[in-house]
Each structure stands twice: as structure tokens, then as C-alpha cells.
Image (cartoon, rainbow, N blue to C red; front, top):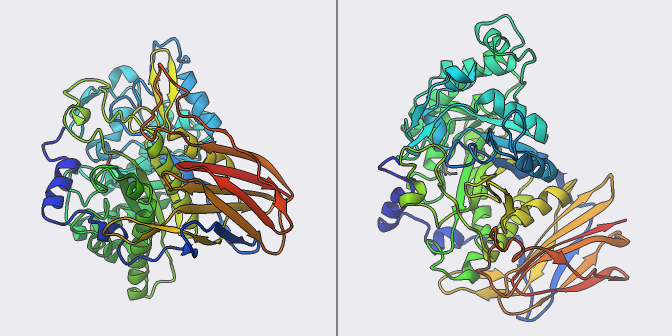
Length: 541
Ligand code: AHR
């Protein structure tokens, strides 16, 4: 591992008072959800299908695969395994991801990408070099590269979100990769792809211009102005090759950065005209920022919303300064819970192939927070067009493999519900919830609700997080205009033990169970959500 890790940086920043204090996380931010009178009052949700955001971009619930630990090797690709197909792709993982219907997958990094030569990963496998991946101190065999990734994406039905090396890489090499992937034929790099046996261009639309370039842990880290200029140049050259690409510039690595928002502003001042989106990253944990207080932890999705609002404000500020007609969208292309495996052996590849890195074991409370984070993304789907649960397999992941099969971690379930049930457009809700107090922080709503309505199928889905750790909470929907007729799906994730987790020995400890279908009386529907729970209810008209 590089001597200067993200974790060490965070610790230093915390000591200097620059990391997320409770105030930075929550202070002075007013929630979309308003207080209800009385601590035991029901949560009232006023909803009207005529009030929706623009249609959801399916890419809101994408994911991420990095050349890191066992994500690629031993995760999606394991030649010689009894579970793999003739291409070396793990069939169990492929089926699971296909079944999940993940819309877009970011690749190949992450920190890895900032030292990656994409040319090492294409062409005959026997000629590909074994190299040292300096980001994770691991051995990269290059047996899986761009073409294998795109082939795998096609099989699982996902679009690629390709990361570019703007650390050691140059804008010229970035444009060469676009040429390799997207030009049909008759140029140096497109003909090389054809020599590699791929006649049809990959037509990759979405590209990330580097990764976390604000971080001193990043290979090729530079100042905001330097990066902004480099990103602008890369974007210009890439568009000369293919004007249809969608480009995402690197925003701040998170609110813990001392340069948070300043970085974003300075970068955009250089490259606003050349890009379409700006990235955000964020990892949450129940130690660092919350001191192990689960009541606080389960409200951290609200601080994701604050981060989105602040980052959007910077984009709009630069738009105004430039008198530009273009509004940038946001790409929340790394988000998850990650706090247990952030240092020591968990991040040190020790020059091994496919080492066990960042193998975070998720428990029930992590899954509940992931549910809350999904609600937050839905509530911001007018601005966030791409978001990636980081990551997908083995590395801080909902899916874990061993030589005999795979395991669904707790966070798999809220993520799969988002993919299955969040369809159409997010509904603009008015939610009145009783609140609780966390010392030193604002009042926080017990019940967090998000909803989507699909005008074509007339399906309406509601996602409810109950942050109350000890009490069931009553929820009342007040339908305005029209009400749906029948509940078609109703599931809940809950349990007595917030620290319970799944393992290969006990894979069903934390799994969803059916939830009693609420019934309607006139224009009202009432039901109770158990303490410590995340549920989905889908109605149809
Ligand atoms: O997802 C793990 C790492 O977290 C990524 O490589 C990096 O971008 C972030 O710091």
C-alpha cells in the first residue's frame, strides 16, 4: 500500500479539526422531511402522483469494480474454477449481477486507475505484462482488461463507466483509449482493437476523467488548477475522437477534505465547458463519525444530501460565473459503508495476486443505512444522474465469493430493492415525522421515506427507513388526487441484533421477510414499521 493512505490522511485531517464534525455532517441543514407534533405521532406522508421529479436515470443505481483485492481476480474472473465459463468468467457471479440488473459499472478504478496503462491489458493474454500495482501494492497480471470487461458487461446487461488514468496517464493516452473503444476502423488504435479480434466498436458513452485527484494518496495528485487544465485537455481530445461521449470531472473525495468545494470550484473554472458531470465520493462508518452511536449512524444519509446540495451549488456558481447555458449533473460514483477494513493488512496487497483486501463484513445496521442512502439518492434524482455502490464483488461489496459459490451480504438487499422497485420518477413527498435528538446535533426524523411512480405501469413504490431503535412507528399515507388499488409487493429487512451479519456458514441470518400488506381506507393507508427496519411496499393501480 502506498505509505500515504486515504485512511491516514483522514486521521490527520481529523486531528487538525478538518474532518467531519457533527456540525459538518448535519448542522444548519433543513431536511426535506418536517417535524410532526408529538414524539409518538404517526408519520404523515402526503403524496400526489402528479408531483414527481424528472424520470429517474437508470444509472442512479450503478456499481463499481476495481482491480483491487479479489474484485476482478477470484470475483468476476477465475479461470480454472469449476464455477467459471470458458472465458474464465464466474458463472454464479455473472448470473447474480445479471439478475440484479445493474445498469452501469465503473471500471477499472479507483486508486488503481491512476497508475494503470490500459495498453497492458489488451491483446494476446500471453504477452500481457505482470506489473506492480502501486496503489494497492499488489501484482496485476493484466489477464483481465478493457475487452474482457466490456464482454462481461454485455453478458450481465450493464453499460461501462470507464475510468481514465489522469495520474501517470496523459490526455493523449486517454483519447487513444476512446479511439480504441469507439472508432470503427481505419485509425491506429481502432485497427489495433480489430487486430485483437474485436471488429465492432464498444461505443462506450460514459467516462471518468481520473479518480480522486484531490487526494494526496492518489498517484499523480496535483493542484485543482493543474487537474482542471489536464481534464479540459483530455476532454477536448476525447471529444475530437468521439463527440458523443459523456464526461465526468473529479470532484472532491468527500467533505473531510480540507479543500472540499474549493477543489470543485477551481477544477470547474478550468474545465466546465468541456465536461457533463462532476463526481462525488463518500464512505460512511459507525465509529469514525458517530462514535458508535447507531441513532446517529442511521441518519448519515442526510449528510449525503447535504454534500449533494453543496456540490450542486458549486456547479451552479461556476455556471453563473461563466454565463453558461449548460447545467452539470452529478455522478456519485463511489458511495457505501466502509470503515472496518481501511488500514493495515486490509489495504496492503503485500505484492500478491488477488490478495484479500477491503473485505468488509456488513451487518444489519449497515444495510439499514444503505437503505437510507438509497432514499437520499432518490430524493436527489433530479441532479444525480449516475451513482455507483462501491463496490460490487468481494471488495466492500454486496456479493462475496469463495471457491464454492457466493454469499449475499446484508447490504445486497436494499440495493436489489432499489434496482427492482425504483422505477419511473421519484415522487415529491411531504413527510411529517416525529424526531429524535442526538446530543450536539439537530433533531433527526425517525422515519425516512422515498417513493417512485411509474406512469406507464402505474406502479408506485415506497421505501421506508425506521431509525427508531426501540419502537415501532406508525406511518400514514394521505393520497391526494388518486390512490393506488392494491399492494403487489411488501418486504422488510429488520432484526433484533443490529450487529448480525451473513456468512457462508449462516447465509440467511439477515434476509428480507414478507411484510404485512397495508390496506387502504378511503384516501388513507395506515401501517406500522417495526423498529430498526427498512421496507419496500409496491402498489399498483
Ligand atoms: O473503493 C475503494 C477506494 O476508495 C477507491 O480505490 C478510491 O477511489 C477510494 O478512495
